[in-house]
Image 1 (cartoon, helix red, strand yellow):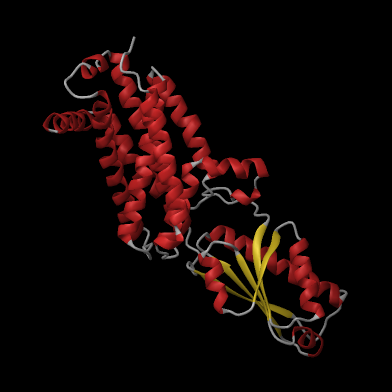
Image 2 (image 1 turned 180 degrees about the vertical axis):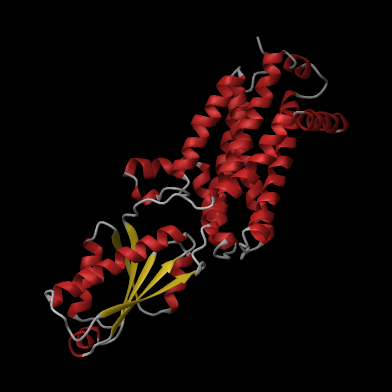
Length: 368
């Protein structure tokens, strides 16, 4: 173990002497946090909606059908009380809850004030705002049809309430996204490039003939990047809390533990790449094209996954960033505990074991 720690110390010195690597490791997270500002938004379709219908009359049923038939919504379930609203949002099952008041049709015909409540999941503020606007337009269109362009003594008004992020701050969306992209890029790319660099320079042969086992040699090169990526997580969280004024509603310990697990997943990917390629250029290409692009597209950070065709939605399940992004948003924004992210955690554990197992099997003791 003394030899193993000596190798780790050597790798730390290599990393700390490489100024370009340090700029990437610590400069990139800070720059992305400051410059991202607002996450890109796009049209939202096929959003799941829950209905709480106190009226149970013809008018409410007609509007529910219109919501379900819209290309933007799909009625996922019907609730029986307002106590169920928080539960469906916690489970991430729906993006919007529509609440029809009692005597909706009667008030529509005989009252000058009819109020329908729209409750959105504002942990993703941009998408929630878009969904609310789509739903409101459906009610406005229905009101215009009833009026036949004539002034009526009544109107349908919607009351909007945003859970988790009532101020609709964009930081609630892009902070988890930046954490996901940074860890995916740095963990996989830096690990794979550092090991392949030893192959290109011819120094890997010297390491492999050392008294330490080859697997421990490779792990000693990955451990410094695990520590540095974990420091990046701390830096991002500090910037989020003190610069962007974004609270961490859930357990900080759980968030750090899940981040460490995701770092191990990305390091396993890096080790897998390093075991199958022999040049830094190839490793860099695989990291940027093979990891960064899927991380951007399939994480759900920039583009809603439910908008994608079915084959792409299925493909997104094999991308680790999708599950980590879901974990970070659930803990930081919604304040949920481990029981709500156990599925995503087990998937990341399985991916880590799978990637690491293949990397060990593919690792070549002889370079020739």
